Length: 315
Image (tube, rainbow, N blue to C red; front, side, top):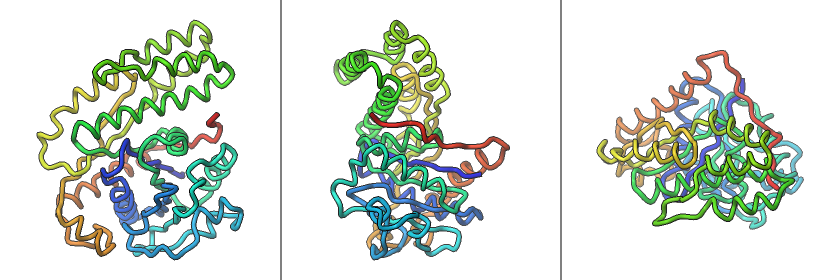
């Protein structure tokens, strides 16, 4: 079994890469063979959180056809079960990979020799991030327990849905443009159009596509990790956020972890030392271990197979 987990955030500065790196260590310590891949094109810095130098060839070598396999580019880390695939931060065009390049990269990622592959995606809603997040139902969204971050998370989800519509309605650009014109309309930052409205519009023109999209949305379960939580009261708004996602986007949100604020994280980052090897709080390490165990129990504790789609394309 191979599990690919895309990890994203609606905005930068929420600790996505810190969580990705240390989740990788936590999963490795549970005995899993893990690879963390830096897919933050244009801003690759995941190596800093793994205690590594940026002096190895990475994804850019593969995408520029200087290496015929990603496996040749993986490097060891401080834990024998954890390996790393360096990103590409020096070439501007890398953030705008065409469809064929994304497809080739996705297929090659799936061939990597690991049980679990964590994809550290760019923050925000660029096409590459949306495409890779949509390829799997196993993604994690990182956010902070504050209104701007959570609203950016909801906007990210809205963008992922519209990105899927690009695939479903690729042959009906007029309808797609019509949906795009009112899907993002808001009054006082509140969307005025729900996904139910969108489905009704699609159903009037393409009932089979509307049915497939509805089934897709109903099956979708978005797993959220809250980072930098100072107190449990910070999460008092969570029920309202879940209701908003359900009513507006027809999405099911589930909180999978709450990682507490820890001032020593900054000290660990300054010396480029993984948190699991630094004197951070037991609460933070416990949260990371619990997240790793939850992933292990959810996907490896049953006989269900987790696949990854390679037929989803950006148009």
